[in-house]
Image (cartoon, rainbow, N blue to C red; front, side):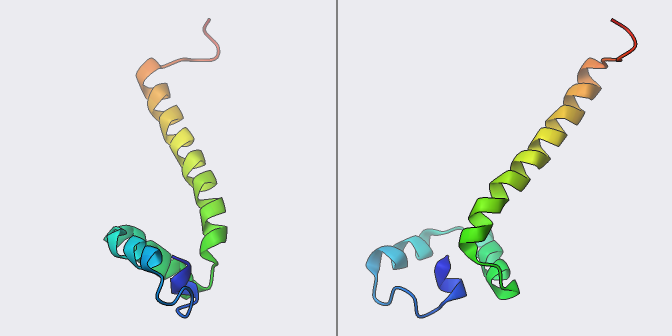
Length: 75
C-alpha cells in the first residue's frame, strides 16, 4: 500500500505485485483515499488499530449495559 503514496516504489517486484493484486477492494480504496489525503500508510497502520479498538470497546460496553442493566446505586 506504500505504492499509493509513492508510485515508483518497488519496480518489478513480484511479491509486491502479488499482494497488491490480492488485496480486497475496500482495503485498497481505504488506503488509496488515505494516500490521496496525504497521510503516510505506515502512520495509518499505527493509528487505525487504536481507533478501531476504542470504537469496539465503546460499542461492546454499550451493548453489555443494555443486556445486563446494571445500576450503580443498587448492589
